[in-house]
Amino acid sequence: MKYKSKSLIMIMSFALVLLSFAGAQAKWWIFGESDEEVSISYLFVNKSSFDETGAKITLFKEMLPDGKITISGKAVAGKGKIGSARVSLDGKETWKDANLSEGGAFEYSFSPETGKTYSIFVEVSDTLGKTNDVAATARQLTLSERNIMSFIREALDKLIAAYENHDAKTFMSLVSEDFAGDMTNLDRAIRKDFSSFDDIDLNYTLNNITSDSKGISVSLSYRRLLMSTKTGQSVKDKGVTEFVFKMGDKSARIYSMKNPLIFGITGAPNVATGTVASTTNDPVIIADGRGNVAEVPAQTFNQIVMDDSVRITNNPDGTSTVKTSDKTITVDKNGQQTSGGSNPSETVEKGLRTIISLGHPPMGFSFVNGEVMTAAGDFMITGGGPGFGYGFVEPSVTFVDLGAKSIGSVNEAPATGYANPAGMGVRFEEGHTYAFKLANGKYGLMEVKSVTEEWIPGNPGPPPQPPAMRITMRFEYKYQPSGARQFLP
Image (cartoon, rainbow, N blue to C red):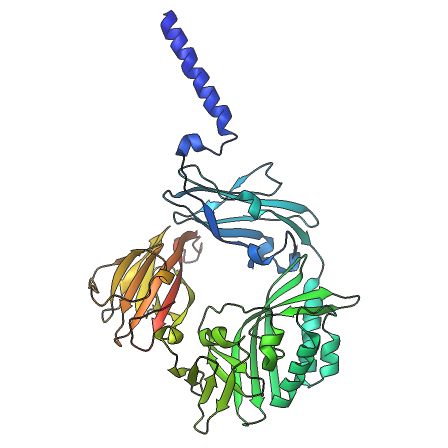
């Protein structure tokens, strides 16, 4: 009896040691230990990247969707899987579990109080006990009731009016004295725009506004139409661009601008502070220093816009030739590239896309058009679950699963191994890259970046509708319109 009692006491004591140690060691006693690193591949507060913000962020109540702040990201583990994701709003005093998918995507939403400062930290752990660098996620976040949207709209409206009216003096008065670029270069580029374009028509929609130590960051979608003074032809495009404003005594003023520029486009290499990555390959207007203008695919634009050697020739047949120091391309009047490039990668069309499926009709994707569409596409999604999308492949298209690898590591589509299990469903796994041989004989690649599921409540009626499962699949794609199998980096 004494031996049994001592054994029981030792077991209970060991359990108490485990429990007390667990509070300080992030549940390693449940999951085990690992030498593999855990990281966060992307992290956002609403639509603003943590990487693009300073340590202190101010959000504006009027810009919050449904009055909530959402922290979202994608955790990546080594050999193990992500086992937990949690967020602290009070400097690690307490933690809240985030919604976590099997593939590592996580999301946490809360309704903030105006004027309160939140000390944000994000911690993700794998099932082997490792965590990310939590200190690197630290942000001070405050919600303001200030009607910042009206200030930004007022500033943008004045800038656009001055630009459309070819009023350089008024335009430059709306630029911050510590403009991140060179004020002289901006003034020169604005005046060159005015001599290059007879008509300027700009429209915009605000996407998001945040504030930090750098200033007031603004994301907007734009549509524009310009008429070339030299050719008399009009060019048009649409896209997303970003500004940083600083508040003056009475109004907001431009501190910096990114490509695609909507102001000063003839001097982009000397004016822009960066380029906003496009999620489409829609045509974008580009201009050279002589005032010649053309529309080029977004991916081509991203490659050459900051090259000050760009020279554009508008040809009599309506095409345009765009030359840089190391390449020559030709685009038609619709902004589609028809020739050029020293290797196949220069003509590759690529981007990030999202398919949202509620079952039927299915949602599909066309590599040729780069578009998500209803009940059509080279592959279609009808359902799925955390970490995988489920659907089928168009009968005239074949494909091969290249396994768990990134699309960036695939330099060439396979020559053989393609198939299409006619009449059978296909499971597209998160983190896997797939090669497709399309009906036109050309090749595409697709990497599933993340898949999440969400139950959507049904309509209570009448007539009543049952709840539905919504599958959201984010993927990256590349399409090789030349017909080559090469997708060089």
